Amino acid sequence: MHLALQDMEYKDPTPIQKETIPILQAGRDLVGQAQTGSGKTAAFGIPIIERVDPGLRDTQALVLVPTRELALQVTGEITRLAAHSGARVVAIYGGEPIVKQFKALDKGAHVIVGTPGRVIDHLGRETMDLSRVRIAILDEADEMLDIGFAQDMVKILRRTPRKRQTALFSATIPTFIRRLIYYHLKEPVWVRIGEEIEMVPETRQFYYEVAERDKLQAMVEVLGKPGTQSQTLIFSRMQVRVDRLVRELQRLGYDVRGIHGGMRQKERDTVMQGFRKGRPNLLVATNVAARGLDIPAIDCVINFDVPEKVEEYVHRIGRTSRMGRPGTAITLVSEWNIEAFDAIKERLGDAIEERPLSLYQPSARS
Image (tube, rainbow, N blue to C red; front, side, top):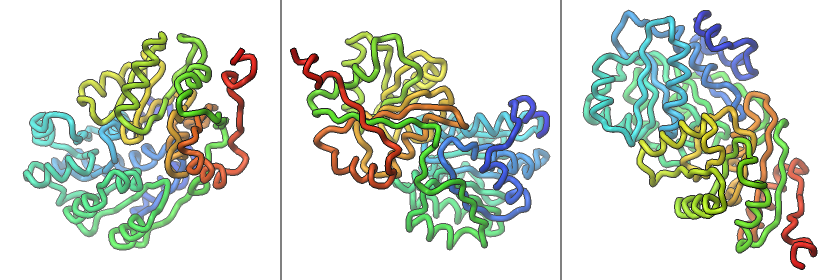
């Protein structure tokens, strides 16, 4: 493990790592609340690799995540942590031919990182055996709940041994998650880093009031000239709006692609690989597609559409200012979503600063 951490250039642990790793190493169940980008993958990944016995063929650790993108990200990080241990880590998610996963599981998987829907599929086909799992992790549990995986989480936990160790990580703790904790975790230690909806302090937040019909023009003003943007993630509510915004921005000369659940997995993977390398430097995504994306280089998040809940706003904004880096969050507020944005402002106070758009200045109309 020490060599793997050296290879990954880990130095000082983040607050969530400092608090949770000793608890998990001691074998205790845990509930962890922390801001997005807090380093929680290593917080549970390190104890997992320390716990796994690569001399056994059994699956000994299970990590459930809400999206295929997060499954790939978590698999990558745990694989790096396992580099010198001999442990095999396998990603299980939808949108990929299941036969490929049959082969990976048949070779033996000490650690499975999967989305609930595809894990349930494998359990139904009896191509996955969780009967010897020692540690189970529910990562971003509230987002799995939002997507509709509530009962799948319960079914999967019931297929693991009762004596397993369990850790649940969630930015928020709604009623269903509290019930899940009560029934499926044994006297868990609760760790909270920051408040439940606390914003990352390094994030500068601005909003612009704009008529819905002028949103594209406002977006162009916010972005500046094509080719001048740093890594920017843009949120839009629906797949059709993502596609439309991408077409319009491309027509204006911007290097931009879109990602949403209506795209083929191979296409989504290609887009994400390019975005991580800075080509393109603008990515338009729906909420569901963006959940779990981990791109450390993101400098700016733009809400083309206002999120419906405060928690969703926090999740979106958490994509920038990761691991202490500074970042910017911009929200375009139209007449259709003033009420939703007022609720966000009321909960988050003066952290969000209003700015004017030049397109509404007298000189812009003359």
